[in-house]
Amino acid sequence: MECRKEENLTHCNCSYEPCSRKGICCRCLSYHLKSRELPACCFPKDAEATYDRSFEHFAGLVRQRRV
Image (tube, rainbow, N blue to C red):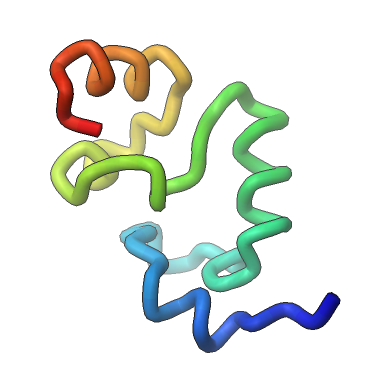
């Protein structure tokens, strides 16, 4: 399967500038899951900006009905 990096970048809300995985979703997801995290695209903009990508943070946002 061919990576559609340029197309993926149009939907990527990651604000971490030195990230080498932007637009390469399979690498991003793999990287974050190893640390019990979710990628930026799972979070609303203000929550993503905290860089807290933990499962616990995501669950709290779900409880608040923000995602």
